[in-house]
Length: 124
Image 1 (tube, rainbow, N blue to C red):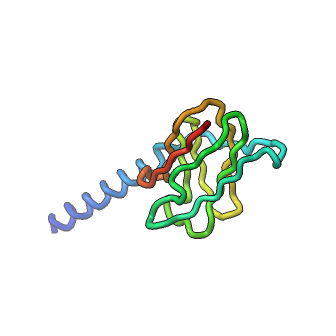
Image 2 (tube, rainbow, N blue to C red):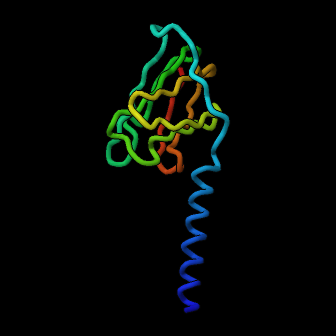
Image 3 (cartoon, rainbow, N blue to C red):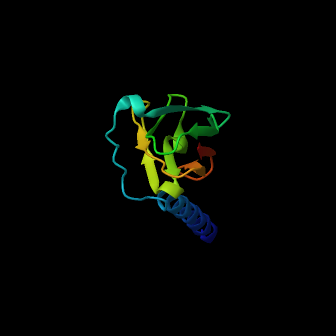
C-alpha cells in the first residue's frame, strides 16, 4: 500500500514539474501589429521529423514579420516562444498568426512552448 502512494506521489510531482515548465514562459499576450499587408514578411512553418521546417528564417530588420503554422505542426510546437522579443503565443490553427517587427539585426532563437523544439530567426 505504501508503495502505491509513493508511485502516485512521484507521478504527481512529474505532472506538476511538466505543467510548471509549460506555463513558466507565459507573458502578456501579443497584439497583432496593424500594417500594410504588402510590407509583411510572411513565414509559414511546418513540421518535419518533430522539428520546425525551415529551422532558419531570414527576415529584414524594421519590417513586420507574420508567422503561421501549417496543419502538419502539432502538440507543443503550436506554441511559439521568442524570449528575446518577449513573445509567447499559441497558434492553435493554421489561420492563427504571430506578427511582430524585429528592429535589430541578429540571430534569435525561437522554441516550442516546452522549449524542446528550436529554430532561428536571422534578422538582417
